[in-house]
Amino acid sequence: MQAFVFTDKRLERYAGQFVWLQVDIENGANAAFLAKYKIPAVPTLLVIDPKKESVALRYMSGATVQQLTKLLDDGKRAVKPEPPASADALLTLADKYASDGLNDEAIAAYQQALAKAPKNWSRAGRASESYIGVLSLKKGEEQRCAQFALDAYPRLKGTSSGANVAATGLGCAAELDAKTEKRDAMIAALEAATRESMNDPKIPLSGDDKSGMYQSLIAAREALKDEQGQRKLTEEWSAFLDAEAAKAKTPEERVVYDSHRLGAYMALGTPEKAIPMLEQSEKDFPNDYNAPSRLSVAYKALKKYDEALAASERALKHVYGPRKITVLRNRADIYAAKGDKESAKKTLQEAIDYASSLPNGQRSEATIAALKKKMDSM
Image (cartoon, rainbow, N blue to C red; front, side, top):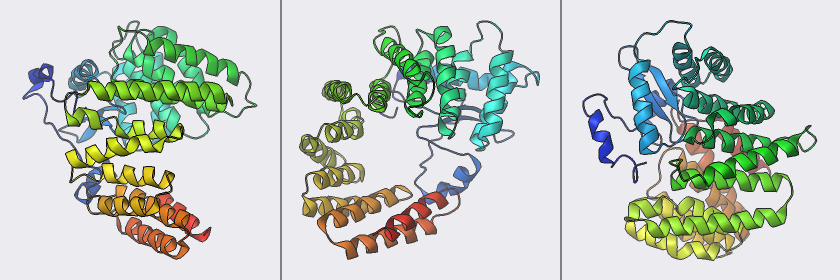
């Protein structure tokens, strides 16, 4: 969005209507904000009521210009009082619950909002996306998530909300146990809906949106143990990403695709293809940790451990916040693959100490426990 959306002149009409705030969730100075407003995924877009300091609107995804303008218009409505039992008021309440991390309460409120919604409700798409987004985060709700996508898609077909609901539902269906009744049929129907949305030229989808939809399709083929279909889709995904990156007009636009391109190359067993791309990104953004961190992953896959450690060292000079834990964990994996068990354990201990030092809002007890378990297994 930084590269493709926030620079769009169509947003100028909102000047003076909103106070724009971009929160760096890796910066410890923002820990209090993160403790108050839960951010389970990035990007998460919030409209905050300035009087109550409560969330009036929450959207857990990236957005195109068209989607963002609709979100902003909805946000202006959401800060105005609505009848307490109306669909609009229930949606605002659900967004607040979700932002507070109260997923069970959010799920119930989203259900009520959708049930109360009048015919042709303008917020039905966003409500459906938000509802299925919370379902997808909650373990044990995979079947309800997939079924909702099947039920909602016909109403949302031909819209960006329909595309997101189909892809999210497909991701949930792919996580179902193979013995789940009608699992394969659910996957097939949601694959068709996801493909239909991807191929609809009338739906304004970003390259990043389509890349995420490819990932859902690939996960579905993997769940069905269709190795040939999975490979074919991964090749298609990789070619799509390369084409999108080639169309980029600026380094900022091109680097958007680095992470997914690396993932595709790794899945295809061709990590060497990522090296020139990431070297260029490191030159273009010398103070950013992402390119060297990704280079360390590619070099590790190539068993070039010294190069991987050198890239990891460069990443550590720039990374901060919870992302530093990921760099340290990968560095420990490099040492382990190299056969240096002592350095691997030392690096994991460094990661544990650092993770434990993070302030409330950034510190994750689950992450600390996982790091300790990993070290104990060595």
